[in-house]
Image (cartoon, rainbow, N blue to C red; front, side):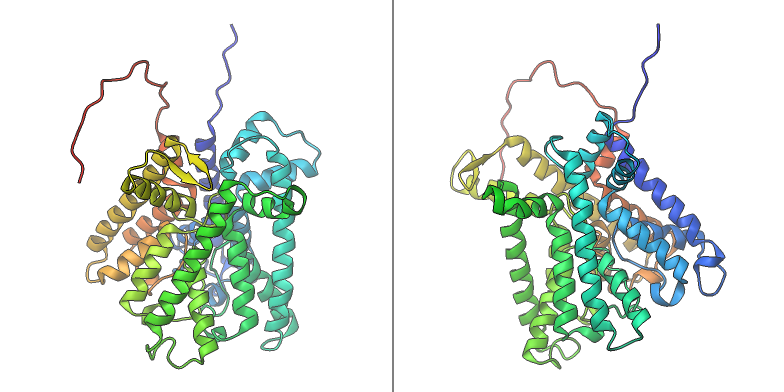
Length: 445
């Protein structure tokens, strides 16, 4: 009797796939050709940088612009692109180019990778994602290149425009501006700020939402998912912008020296980028503690499902708020736009939030031990940034010990792949319970 072939389930494939990309990237970054000094990165720094790029985080232990050669920067850029779109999307692209048929197993992997609810039209969606990505990144690169050409040579401006367009659309936050300054010199520049904010937002709302917006003129209808993503994302950006504007208005190290328009642009950019992008036009280390706490909360929520960003996601937050509001009103069902949210979705939202909170708190506790002497707010900011794949830092990243780097590497990986995906990948799936226990009552609150 022929033995059945055993296939890895989608969570295992995704975890192993991302790990393989990180490993290959890390090996390339250790090569002498990758760094300007001709020595290559140390293994731990190479793994850290490769993880940060593949998980589209942006935390860096060495400055990207001054450490890496063109080869090293292109390796990082490729990992950002693959990590942002998902390696299964790339694999599908090459399979379609070669005229191969996409198997059922590959469609299941695509569905898991894109966090889509259905397998129907998944290959068409993957193809459209690649088109959207190429078009958006190209337009962003052209606009940024034109603006940068006023400050640098044409060739350098084109390369910088392309690099920063890809980095920000994929919510990675890597930059080439030198010595961890990011985009602080462009804090009041309308072209740079609004272009990058647009790239970050488009990458953060999710490809499913982009696809629905693209088809809206034809179908004249938006799904509940898209409505919640757009409304929640808009509210969070407004809250973040207003919060940073008023909290930093009198801060001489951030907004105070700027004009009113500069203050608004600086507040808007920092609010948008806190949603898992990682670039900054204000000095993060100089922000008030109130602003830092607000940014931590924005980072923890993050972007939307099926996007290039991390965090617990906007839909998770909205589902939990809806559940709390329904409980307060004494209602059994959670209703949005006259549609009822299933209990399974609410349980998943609770699980995702608790898993993320548990991971952040656990790693923060461990870092307070390994990074003795560091400020608590600095540590929890760093961990939340790693979990939500944001990339903002108060300056702790380059000072991390080897153990601290290993902890942040794991946190970035878990944040990008998802704590639940890792849990599913390392545990044995069990069949549904054959029976149910009697109900028990406990007191809450």
